[in-house]
Amino acid sequence: MRNSHYSKRKLHPKVAEQNYIRYVVQEMQDFGLHLISGTWSRDDKIELSVSIGISLNGIKIFERSVEGKNNQRSRKCGKRLLYEAFDWVEIENIYFSKQILCIVVRKSWRMNLNQPRLKFKFKMDSRK
Image 1 (cartoon, rainbow, N blue to C red):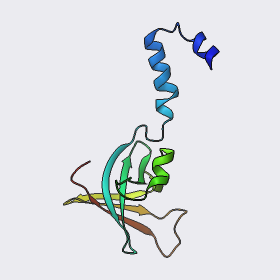
Image 2: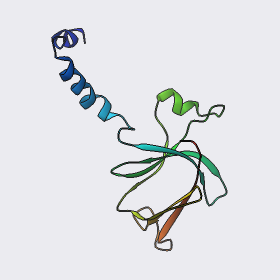
Image 3: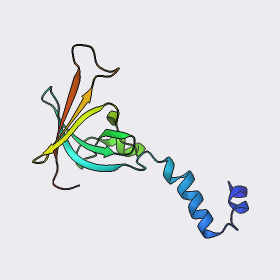
Image 4: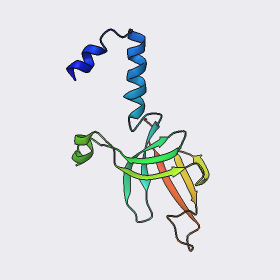
């Protein structure tokens, strides 16, 4: 590590910054995601506090760390628990009305023939 640092210490600051962005920042799990906070109302009457990540690849639903809750596992490792992920090809419809976001996912490998679509309903927080 010391030799690597020594060999790169004469890099121009702009080149060093580009290398940092290319090799460190772009490899982060949340790179390119726009995160929105909300509450996921599931069909089994359970409400989960989630972060909805929107990116070029699709939509991801993560657990949201809430102060005072027992989310120690996700805080210690610095990564969020991924509940669901959808590519844009899988998403049939998205609609938003009065702070309710609904995402309808078309039939894919994760569903059986009796269930042609899944509907995910989120109540959006007023804060981000």
